[in-house]
Image (cartoon, rainbow, N blue to C red; front, side, top):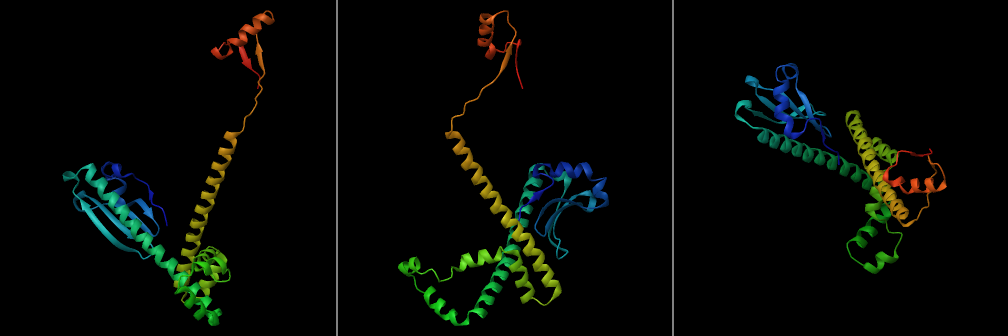
Length: 245
């Protein structure tokens, strides 16, 4: 799922509008948040009031819009409205992502069925019944979820599949663009999670190890006894003692 990028925080929306109402916002709307194909615009509406508008950038269409009377509203009300607008964008974006992703998955299923016509009925009959012992022992039965997840994340395979099932160039480019962005995001999250897990594992291992460190210090003193006493005062911050780097 795509993430929401907020360029202006909820609580700062009304203050920002008032600050730029007679300058930037007099010339054009300003994007204050973005998610997927959707942008949340702040604009100067009729009578200098504040307008919020959700725009579908891909389709160049307005999804929803709302106007606030600046003199009769509060920071809290505007903040709440911006938050709800961002939530709406997130829902719309997730719906779009799921719709396109599941469509590609269906193409994978159709492609597999074409190449395994003789096995389709057998697999269907097996999947209609739950047999725990058979599931444990049969390794040749395709795990549909693993198959789809693994194949889909192979960007080359997915792009070739899109080219195979779509002939309309505009739709083909739409799905190619989506697949690249979606797969890159999914694999980057997987990589990030694995990196965090590895860092946590190393951290835990390091905590179990005991390390010995040796430091060299220089002490200004008249004799060894004097130097020994100075070392005892080292932790107290005696400025006559310096650590060699």
